[in-house]
Length: 212
Image (cartoon, helix red, strand yellow):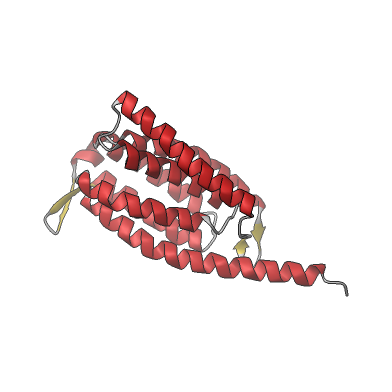
């Protein structure tokens, strides 16, 4: 991994390590694959996780590094969950979250961010503990919601992107910041795609449930 961290390319005057370049490109591919609800989303995510863990450790971003470990575990769960909830026509079955699920996501995001930020401060594990913590917790909430097929996970990703761009720039990870901007555009498109799929699934359920 040291080779990937200490060798790289220069793009528009900005040096980018191979680990950061490959990791962010894999992460970008994950968003593209998730929109299409394919199981390839998860093994590609595992590869991105391994690469980005090393990048964030070297940049002294404990929250972003730690979240890669959690993402790996959630990715294994998501891989299993998606393999059990597939549809031959539309891929993984998705739906809108219930209000209780939305509230649980919001509570987990807010409460988790506070707890994680205080932990990062106590451990001196990040130079920007609050945004670092928000990205850490937001990512876990998003992946957990994605694993069970909730459309709202795209909204969480938009919040993570909004926090992540200035944090990446402040860390000198300009390529990663640019990738986050591309993420945002793909997230909006994915949100629209999943919303349409959820409406189709719901309409089909109503047709099936209607008396003949």
